[in-house]
Structures are given as structure tokens and as C-alpha cells.
Image (cartoon, rainbow, N blue to C red; front, side, top):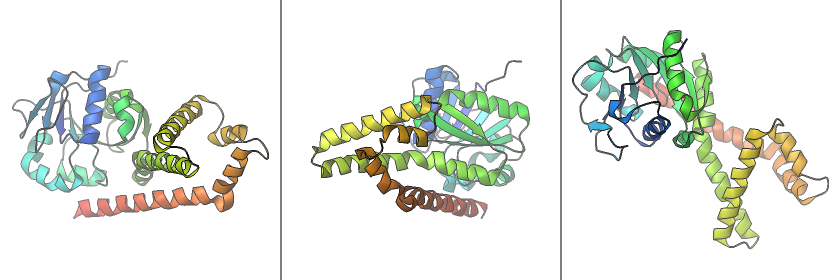
Length: 270
């Protein structure tokens, strides 16, 4: 049985993340640019033939509305566009911290799916975590088909788990960017010129990630394969592994990000 992929879209807000999703959808052919209407406070650079305005278009509701503005603007959007959005059959929210029940209260009527993408969706190599416990399977299938060109799509029925998963993949690219910079800085400390150290670090992470993605072995086993007993790699790994230093650092990092996500959820309920 073929799945009906949403074709007519309204995007309420189209910043960096929603814009990255839109570009990939259009490039992959899953969405046609001339079937998309964007409501933005200010004009942004969007793919050609995408309509952009300050208000929603006249006429019947689209197949899907996606909320992509700042979470703090939720109540403003409800006042301005809520009645019209509520007529759409399907509502997708990429608003961090705004829970399913909060969305259902603000927009009664549509099937609701929360989506947490990360920025590599622009390249079709992202991750999108989805949650829509109350949505019918047909709506879930439609959203999954729309998200498929963006990269890995993962579902969870547990909204608390959704927050944790979103923290890992949503915030993870920023943490990896920091790691790449730190690897380059460490190379500079060894005397490598800064521009070369930056190129080496970036290419090393890119190649290692591709190898990990294509291998049947776990990253831990791949690390052991690189690290000969008594060799230089093993000595470096000993520093990272000592007292689980790296695991503890990343656990503290994700915990701080997840904590902020819970705070934002509480703020959205007020």
C-alpha cells in the first residue's frame, strides 16, 4: 500500500533548521517548491518558487502545517493563526520543549507529531526523532515518509525518551564541532600550523565517522583495532579512558542540555 506523502505545506517560521529541512525536501523531490507557503516575521532567503508572507494564504488548509518558529512565540502564533492551523489534518512541531499535550491544547483538531531534527538534515545525513503517541498510524506513516530524505528517522512513544533522544542527536552536532576544534587546537599545540591542523582534524573526523557508519563493528572495537598494544594511539586512549573521563564529560554535557529542555517544556505550559 502506497503512503500519501504530504504535498501542500505551510511552514510557520522558517529559520535555520526548518530551512534546512525544506531545502532537502525540495532537492530530493519529495516536496515541490510551489506547494509550500512560509509565514515569517521577516523575509529570509528560501528556495525559488516557495511563497513567503506575513500571513497564511487564503483557501483550504494544506496537508501539513509545521511549526518552526521560536518556542517562545507559540502563544502569539495561537492568537494570530491558531484557528486556521487547527483546520489542517496534520501538525508537525519542531519546537524544542513544547510537549504534545501543550500542542493539543493550543491546536485542537489536527493529528500531532513532534519532530526533533538536527542540522545535517540539510545534507540528507541528519537524524529526526519523532513522537506522536496520540496520532493515528496513517499520520505517522505520512510524517515518516516526509522525513525519510533527511536521514535516519527514529520513533519513540515515550515523550521523556523523546527529550533524551532529541538532546543526543539535536545538540550532538554542536558538541562534535567543539571536538573537531579541540582536536585541531591540540594539533597546534604539537606545532602543526593552525590551518593545516584544522583541515587534518576535520578530514579525520569525517573519515572516521564514515568508517564507523559503514562497519559492522562497534566504535569501541574499531578504536581497539587502530590502537596497537603499547603504541601511540593506545597511549592517547589511556588518557581518554582514565576514570571514564570522556564518558563522564559527555554525560555531564548531555545532562545539562536535557535539563534545559525540561525547563523549556515547563515554561511552554505557563
